[in-house]
Amino acid sequence: MASAESDATDPGDAADARATTTGDAAAGTTTGSTTAAGGTGDRDRTRDRDRTRPGPTSAASPTSAASRTSRTGSRPRGRTRGGRRTVVTAAVFLLPALVLLGALVVYPIGYSIQRSFFDQSGDSFAGLDNYVTLFTDDSIRTAVRNNIIWVVVAPTVATALGLIFAVLTERVRWGTAFKLVVFMPMAISMLAAGIIFRLVYEQDPDRGVANAVWVGVHDTFAEASGFPRARPLPVHPLKAAGGGAYVTKAPVRTGEIARLPLVGVAPAQMPQDARPARTPAPEAAGDGGIAGTAWLDFTRGGGGKPNAVDAKELGLKGLRIEAVKDGRVVARATAAADGTFTLPAAADGAVLRLPASNFREQYDGVEWLGPTLVTPAIIGSYVWMWAGFAMVLIAAGLAGLPRELLEAARVDGANEWQVFRRITVPLLAPVLGVVLVTLMINVLKVFDLVFIIAPGSAQDDANVLALQLYRSSFGTDADLGVGSAIAVLLLLLVLPVMAVNIRRMRREARR
Image (cartoon, rainbow, N blue to C red; front, side, top):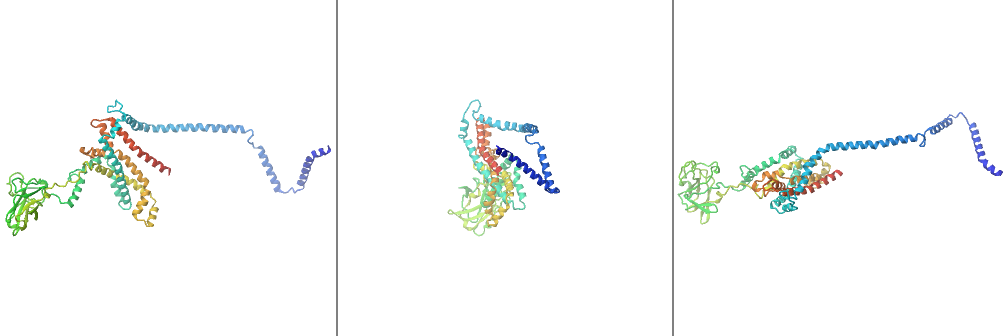
């Protein structure tokens, strides 16, 4: 028992003993130690502040929690009101555009799709009959074929020319002026461009610029005909020899004057330096030779005698004469400005022949607006307008290329063609894609150039879908069902190109 009580009181006694010992030790220490006293005082003040500061479970906690709850509850309501206000503001600004979009785009598309399933009158359901017509009617099939040609050729050529112009003008001093000239056609409307090229492609070389240039080049390398409709009269000493040539009715002899009169030459086709015709003296041809005159046997204002050289009649300058004996040409001559000519003695007893080359119709150039070339000719006018557009966009992309890559390729030994093909074109691929897709969408809708440039006789050969849409919907015997089906077909052709363009734009945006 005593042992248990001793055990129970031992801890307290030990604690008292330690406290007494500590107090004695503290009393025995030097009380003048300022550092120990200051450190003890700081610890005491820190403990006092900790005891007086309210903790998480203090009485102030419910009020603080309520305050925080109030603040967090009010923020979502403010953001909701602000979000609704933003949506309403955006809707107010977008509403006019949405109304116009619906009225001018969505509704017409929907109505065209609906109308394409009805007949010409619009009262009876026709099913797919209008779409079957698209692939059975010859005019519409021609339009589809021409549209394919347009989509393949026009954007490709315009983009290629734009690329060439942009690259070549980058290094020249007058590049800006050249770009301005090439881009200027973009300021002209399609209607004005169509009228311009309708005149450019005129068949008459005196009016059409294209044929004027073409005929000039042709006549430089091919001998032109001087008297395309000239012919002899029955009373003249000439007769037809076949193939467009004429020969004398009797052989010519030394000492005789050979007379070669013709009619049918318009005054405008006479050589400008032609002089009044005259009859040469027999001795003008020399010893044994033959002299003669070729002239227009027609007197303006009337008068004159057939087979006789009158004072007002002009010589046929440049007329070619051949002396033919036994089926072969033994001598040749060309009439002078006054129509006189001479042949050597070898022509004695020969028949004089006027070759068909004298009377061949003049070369009038190319029939640009004929059935064969009308579509390429109109594509040429389109390229003339849109090559400047392609050039400007490609030049902008070219200006942003990293020059260090081009210079590095040149330092490595690449020539300019290799730099262009392996560096410039690959880096410009995104820009070229934008230009190509934009022009393809534009080409699918081409109408006014074809309608204005192609003459009525060639419109069937130059037909495209947009023109056929107009003719089917508003032309003679109009059928709005077929016209609506063509419109839907055009929409279906444009959608894939637009989808490719949108995908490319999104891919570029992610970069």
